[in-house]
Amino acid sequence: MIVSICILIFLVCLYIYFFPRIPKRKKHYAYALLLGCPAHDDGTMSSSQIKRCNLAIDMYKKGLYDTLIISGSNVKNEYVEAKVMHNYITNKTKIPTILETHARNTFENFKLSKEYIQEQDVLILTSQTHAKRACAIAKQFFSDYGCSWFKDLKMKHILREIISRIIYIKIEIQKKIGRY
Image 1: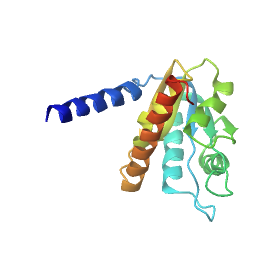
Image 2 (image 1 turned 135 degrees about the horizontal axis):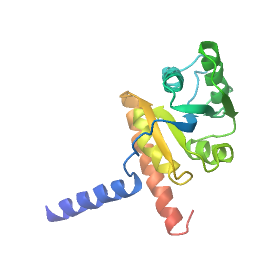
Image 3 (image 1 turned 120 degrees about the horizontal axis):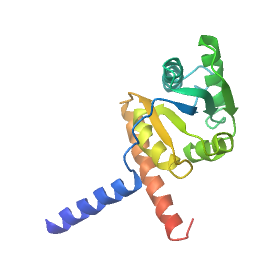
Image 4 (image 1 turned 90 degrees about the horizontal axis):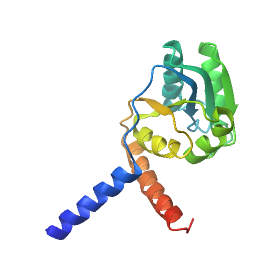
């Protein structure tokens, strides 16, 4: 029993260490970073893409950022995530936009977008299930960031995110001990 409690406390502390609180959102950012997600194999937008794009549009209309960076490559199929999402947004409204079309994962979204954002503040736009890990990664690249998300409680997304968080913790531990 005591061993189980100690293991549980250790795991909770590990989780809190690697996934700190999401910073409180400010009223305005120079940039927003819209994290990509794949289109369907026929090129139609996934529901997650549509929700992320609508979030970007809503946050822009509320005056929360000046310039939108859409990041994502063609990871799952031939359709470049950033381009598909950009087309949707430009058909709905005009937002100053930069496309980053080479990122193949969340870490690369931040790494490759850093060259545009540099030391300015950034609002991360993603799903609820992805927000915590996205912010943990953002902290490695940006000192001033916030996050907005849409509600996402699909079981397959939650399960995928649990696996992604375990992999993230493993990679971060490997970095700390010099094995990555």
